[in-house]
Image (cartoon, rainbow, N blue to C red):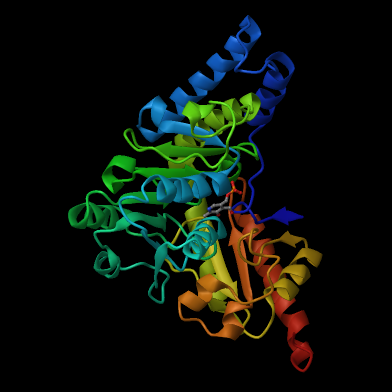
Length: 383
Ligand code: PLP
């Protein structure tokens, strides 16, 4: 089996697994306990916070650990909305966002907030001027993702950040950085980011842990009530092993970023070119998108059918993001890009990791050709 679903979950580095095991064996004490074993565990968290802050070029007290990027996104959006409701109840986001952002906004909408969903162009890119036109005096938050998790489009974060601060300096800018870290440089200061979410398990770290950067001076309304962990922003006993291993994964991924991109970009380009030669398939991801994501559709064929066929042929792919793949309706992201329903429900996402080789891509191409050939005669039986 060849695994092509790194954007859903990437295999942890060996060093990450070793760190997890070692810390669970040696440092199981509660980091809030006052005894020595507890304070040692607490120091490990502080050190991990410093490492993450170093990688992101921010202050350690601006780093918060959560249970995953889903929680980081929920906390950033709802925590800011609830905390700053006195400033206004208007939020801007896009139709491209991951469900953890999109559904958080819909939930706030039900609770009385006004949400403006910005429409992307046909490539899946947000026009900063369109977003600028939506900013108002009562806009408390703008949330835009760095790289789209389905098609890999990259958003012009610096232009968006600059425009927000020019029009309304009190509007906070949240970036869902989950799919961008590891393939693009992270420049929180240049982007003007106030809040930034990361998911360690997408960058070969552990699952069940997330990172949220909160710029100094910003307060978030806590979504969980309990102890005073994480500066009172996120109650709950910290997962020391996962936090330390996340810091390791963040640092390793950052150090390897340029080499990994140099290796996978030609592979991605080759695959894109190949898919373009198959008449039955339509490429949805752009040449200038993220180097680790290729997205195509077999219009009229459900993505699940194609994905199952490819799995029979030894290729593990995904239909869109893992969080949305159990929904059978067409992709919200592809529809927002102006694709028709047949294309939007026939999507396949291939996502690369650092272990992939040219031989793997050649094998994938052969499997795609065979899948198309095998599924094609079922013309009348297309689902
Ligand atoms: N944001 C984006 C863009 C994602 O791709 C994902 C996961 O697929 C998430 C957020 C949620 O991350 P987690 O799995 O850590 O909750």
